[in-house]
Image (tube, rainbow, N blue to C red):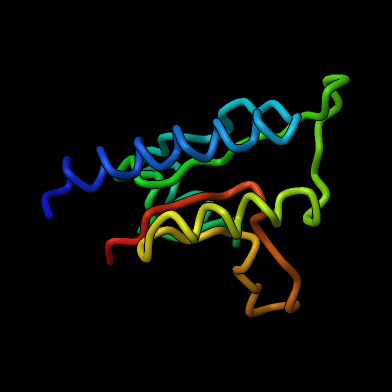
Length: 118
């Protein structure tokens, strides 16, 4: 599949995820949806990301969740059902909440949703 076809599938699946988030009574906003290569390099040097981030290819997004009162949610357990839903939409979809840091074993990226084409 071409990059633009992968991006189209990613966008379609993200729209389904956002709909699911809303159906469950939450709201979301976009966090980082596009990352420049320069920013990816900076994050990699700081240990906050990787050099070949899928954000740079428009195949990853960070979604910020909010409850019905507008409170920002960071709790992994609230994101988890959406991560499971995301991965069930397609075999290329990966949720960052299942990523484990090689340094401390903690979940590192609950708000991250990507289409892994590598």
